[in-house]
Length: 219
Image (tube, rainbow, N blue to C red; front, side):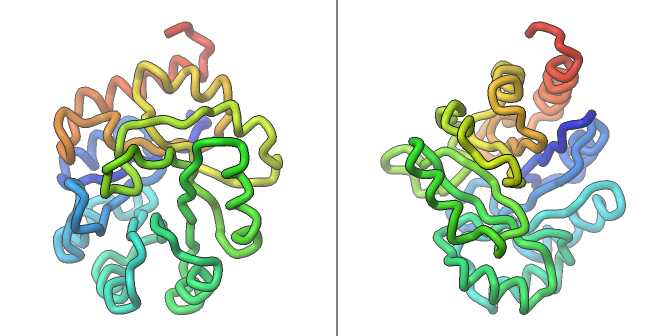
């Protein structure tokens, strides 16, 4: 498939196999204690080794300090770091210099003006992940199963490299791709049977829906 797909929040080898067999280009591991998808660096190391050479391994953290990132990078040896908190452009520079790894910055969007968040990170972030702003009361910056208004991306500069995230699933991915023209997508809760529990059947259904969308087959 031409669309890059990242399955995020993986916690088992079976889920990794389902993701990669389906066509995932990236697999993501969450290092955030409040998330039901949280894994320890030690557990993630085994999972990352299982995916090595088959998909790019992404370490997702939220406002992590150097010691935390040191432990993650040492154990997991990720191909890409995803910073999903309120990290500043200066923090991104520090992280890139410290580890010599590409860094993707997640930004929470809701309305047109939120695209202004991109500016300070241009030339610093190696790419962006556009997620929906968390619903009221949520302690999770992502993985909330909610989407934002994709129409706001119509004014996005063509040179912005991004992954589309937030509330994607097999039922809406066709519309999401048609409306945004996204070249890369990220999904987590949309392929779960319960919070943090990936469902191999739902993963397969999602990839079928992506394939159908690329072929122009109506959902």
